[in-house]
Structures are given as C-alpha cells and as structure tokens.
Image 1 (cartoon, rainbow over the protein chains, first blue to last red):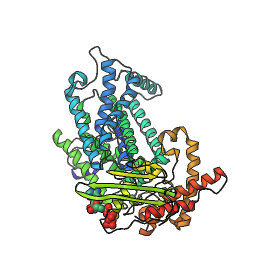
Image 2: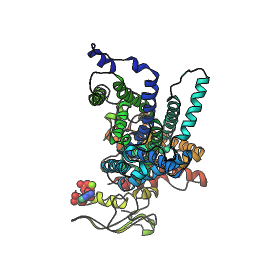
Image 3: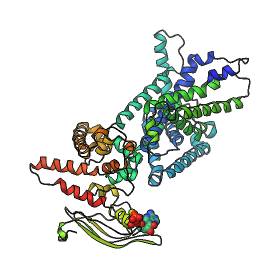
Image 4: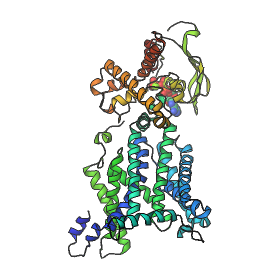
Length: 336
Length: 206
Ligand SMILES: Nc1ncnc2c1ncn2[C@@H]1O[C@H](COP(=O)(O)OP(=O)(O)OP(=O)(O)O)[C@@H](O)[C@H]1O
Ligand SMILES: [Mg+2]
C-alpha cells in the first residue's frame, strides 16, 4: 500500500528510507505490533474459538495498565508484585462484566463490554488524584515511577548488546524482545489449549451453546473462562503499552483500539492464533508506515489518511481473501 | 407403552406446568418412561411437546411440577447437570456442530473427560490423555456403526441432513463407552448398552 501511494504521487518527496530504518521496524512497528498481538490473541480466543463478542478489550487493557501503575506509583508496591495483582484485578473486572451478560444473547455482551470499557476510560479521565486524568500517570511527587524497575533492566540489556558489538543500539530493542517472546509464548499456550478437550468444549460452545449444554457442558462457565483469560491478556498488553509510552493516559484506551484488534483478527483470519501476529504486523506497518511518509498535507489529514488506507486494505482483503491470511475458507461458508 | 410399576421407570414426569405470558404451553403433563422402553409423545402442532421436552431437559425452567430421572429430582436444574445424569436429547432442528470435524462431534459427547477442565489439562495430563484414547476408540467404533467412518475428519457442516441426525445421536457414544467401562470394571456384562439406545430413542421421539 505504501508503495502504491508513492507510485501515484511521483513528484512528491516520499522518504521511503524511513520505512526501512531500525527505529521504525523495531520501535514503531515491532513493539506496537507485538503488544497488539497479545491484545488480539485474547479477542481471537473469544471470537474465533468461543463465539463471544468482546468489544471491551481496550477497557480490560486500561484496567491492567492503570492497576499496575497505581499500585506502583501510589502505594509504592514493587513492579513485580503489582503486575500479577493487576492481572487479578483485570480478570475480576472481566468476570464482573461477564457474569450478568454472558447468560444473555451474544449481542448483550458486546454492548455491556463496550460500555464497561468507556466507563473505565471516563473514570480514568476524571479520577485525577488516582490516575492523573488526561495528563496521565507516570511518577509520584518523590519520583517513584511505574517503569523504574523496567528501565534498570533495559539499561542493563542495552549495555550488554552494546558489549556484543552493536554500537548505539535501538533503545526499544529490549522491550521489542520481551514483548515478542511473551506474544510467542502466549500463542503457543493458546494453540496447545485449543487442542485439549477443554478447547474442544470451547469450540462446541461457539458452534451451538444449547447443543453443548445438552451434552452436559456448562456453556456459561466456559464463556466466563474465555473472557477472563482474554482480560488477563489485555492486562499484559497494557503493561507493555505502559512501558512503551511516557505515561499511562486515557487516550491509549479508546474504543478505536479494540476495533483495531478486530481489524487484526480479520486480517489474520478467524480461529487461527498465528494469523493474529501476521495481522498485527500488517496492521501496524500500515498505520505506522503512513505516519512515516512525509506528505505535503496537514497532520490531521495524514491521520485520517492512515485509516483510509487501513480501510481500503481491509476491503481489498474481504474481496479477494475473505477468510483472512490464515483463516480456513470452509469455516467461513459452513454454519447453520 | 410398557405397563411396568413405577419402580421400573427411569423417568417420571408429574404435573408439569409451563406458561409463556398468557400462553399455557404445558398444563399439568404427567408421564413415565419405563426402563428399556420406547415411549412416544404425540400431539398436534403447538400442543406443547417441544416445551415439555425443554422443561424435562432443563432448557426452560418449569413453573410447577416434578421431573425425576432415575430416582433424582431434576426439576428446574440447569441442562448441563441433567445431561450429566444421563438425559440425552436431540433438537427438533438438528444441531450438529458445523465447523467442527465429525470426530470431534463424537468425542465431545463423552462424559468424565477430566481434560475438559483447564486445571486438569495442566495438573492431570496423563489422565486426560488416557481418557481421550478411550473416547476416541469408542467414537471410531460408533462412526463405523453409523457408516460415517469416511467422513470422520470432515466438517460436520458438510454432512447430509440424515447423516447429521445420526451424528446428533452421538450421545449414545458415551453411554456405550460408560457401559464398556463398567463391564471392564465389574468383569461382567451388567449394564446393557441397549438400554442406552432405548433412552436415545425416547428422547429422539421429540
Ligand atoms: N419461547 C417461547 N415463548 C413464547 N411462547 C412459546 C415459546 N415456545 C413455545 N411457545 C408457545 O407454546 C405453545 C407450544 O409450543 P411447542 O413448541 O411446545 O409445540 P409443539 O407441540 O412442539 O409443536 P410442533 O408439533 O409444531 O413442534 C405454542 O403456542 C408456542 O407458540
Ligand atoms: Mg415442537
């Protein structure tokens, strides 16, 4: 797509070199795509394997990130203790949202999750004492920051790679490695889980909840578990997002990001975990790439152009490969 | 049909009442199903047969009445719990799990698979694998019986209507497997798998 834009506008100076530099590949695309891979893996579990429509993933990510940040900055807890606690809080929030709505038809969960996510974001904007409001949350007045522990590791890692002979290493390289290792581990675990009898029941629930119940499966419990795991993954994505930005702020958790997650699912294909990573890489190359290109238009126009390009890419994909990169065509056409 | 004493009944339904707003769908239905019998419930369209089945199997909570399955009161219990007690049902509109392979449709029906709990997948992998092997064997045997072996790995959604209905009777798989287990355990041919088949027929009469 990027080349296409370039080809149509030859007289304009388009700096394609920016797209191949390490900062772009690792920082702009690599880290973000990895974070959204983890984020969208939860959506894949929900939508692709359980048949539940979770529109609140950005909200679960916000709960995870804010819980971690608040625990470290406001209560002085260690980063390493705050993370598991924040996961527990995000899962509890997921279950709280799921308990009343998962018993109802699928669309109710969609409505309730998107509402819950917006409540979280608006709360974060307004509970300034706790979250720093729109300014965001980063450090306490006596300079305890949520990312202190990570910065130490990052500095150590950068010194180490420099020692190996990489002069002036890309500063986001350590985060890039940790994010993608996490994404791959999560992918592998989900892939294995989907092949167990547990995963088989999940898919049965996706196909027909009542048929699953008639076979003695507690469909509701499986849907809750699916949502809980997804919330945990969103929380983990939220930690990495927090480490990738200067402060945890509400604008990182707009509903838009949940829908980018769905775009990733569509690109990669439903019911395929590896496709999520590829979908996320394509998505963020498109979004990041259009930001890098130096076009003679205003920033707002360029921001809009980004999503036009993403939209066109998704439409083309639907036209030529509706099952996504890795989805199974049979699974799209079958169904009752 | 069978005029055995109530002691021989595996299912006793008494005075079941179910209304939807103003519609009295089931008004005091009572019947018994004798062990080993084939029992049919008949009536004109809209008589409330499906509704009664849904109350008996727990899919609708009944307003009043009693449903006793093998001596246990199951009235208003959730469907998955009633199913685990041996209540096997199909649906008026066939419910095959279309985007799952035929073999998975079969193995899914097996009871007592510890690996259906995430905890056990992690903590009891050996038990999960052992049970899975048994379940698969039973499923393959049944597919042979139904003449579905060739399509074992195909998506259930690609089957014909009749084949799907057969597949929906998959619940037999677990009764047979349970019977086989019991035979092995007791060293005698005690629980007769034909009973299970009769039960399935009773349910399928819907
Ligand atoms: N979920 C529901 N909500 C409201 N009314 C219902 C519901 N289900 C059934 N009914 C009504 O209850 C009555 C009995 O319906 P039911 O489906 O049990 O009949 P049936 O005997 O199975 O008919 P058929 O032979 O056509 O399958 C009908 O009047 C129907 O409209
Ligand atoms: Mg009916």
